[in-house]
Amino acid sequence: MKKFLFICLVAIVTSACQKTDDVVEIVAINSATDTLIATGTFKRTTKNTSGNVKLYNRPNDYLLVFENFETGSGPDVRIYLAQNASAKPFVNLGSLTKEGTFSLTFAKNVDVSSYKFICIWCEPFTQIFGTAELQFIN
Image (tube, rainbow, N blue to C red; front, top):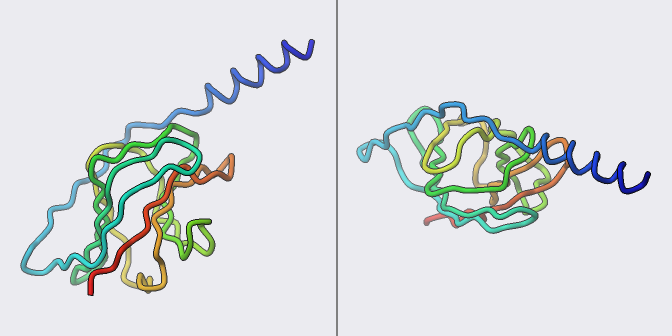
C-alpha cells in the first residue's frame, strides 16, 4: 500500500511540473536611450538553471533581458527581483513562461540598486530553482 501511495504521489508531482509556452515579447534595445546597468549569470539552486541576464535602464521603465536561459520545469514558476539569494524581500516580475532569449519590462518605481538577485521561484513548492547575482556597472 505504501508503495502504491508513493507511486501516486510521484505521478501527481511529475504531472504538475509543466511550464506553458506563452509568447513573451522580445523588446528591442535602443542604444541611444537604453543603458546597461547590470549583468548576471544563473546558477542552480534546486533545479538545473543556466543562462545570462542583463538589466537596462530605459527612459520609462527597466528592461530585463534573458539570454540562453534554461531551467527545470515546475508549476507556477515566477521571476523575482530580490535583495538576497533567498528571495526575501522580493518584487514579483511575473510568471516564467519561456526559455531561451526573451525580455520583460518593469516599472521604475523599484529601486533596483537595493535588489541584487534575479530568482527563479516555484510558488506551489516554495523553491528557488536558480539565481543570478546582478553585478552593477559603475
